[in-house]
Image (cartoon, rainbow, N blue to C red; front, side, top):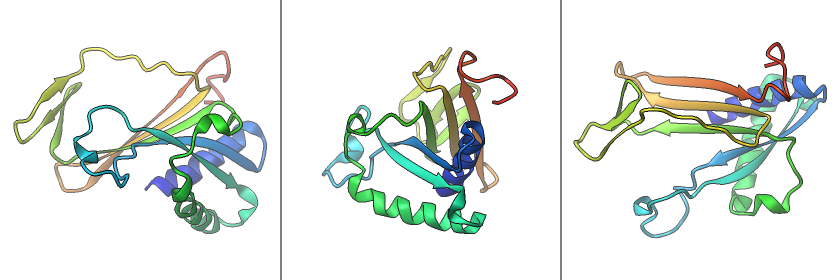
Length: 163
């Protein structure tokens, strides 16, 4: 799923910038780092990885294959500092997978096994990015995965028609 969204976002971003070559960053949760007890760490372990999608790679299948290869190659650099890399045109993509133990009730995520329950009453997610793409995958009640997506943008940077 992540590779597909990267390619689609690269194509959207490419159309927005008018360039064949799109460079953007995406957030990773880093919960798979080889640290003992990483699953018990409280707090964010997020990092940003850069992704480059070039329409000149050829067909959509070629772009998907190249994006997957680039991702695998990037794993050795996933803990580098984003500040050491040039700005990536103020865009970001965020992918999330919700644990199947979490049930969505209205605006609340609740653990099905009776664990801690958090309820969101109100939320605002301002950030410094001109354009954001959010994708969230969750196991559906029918056994099928459900994907929710949203695009956010600052209206002083991008028109509603462009978004």
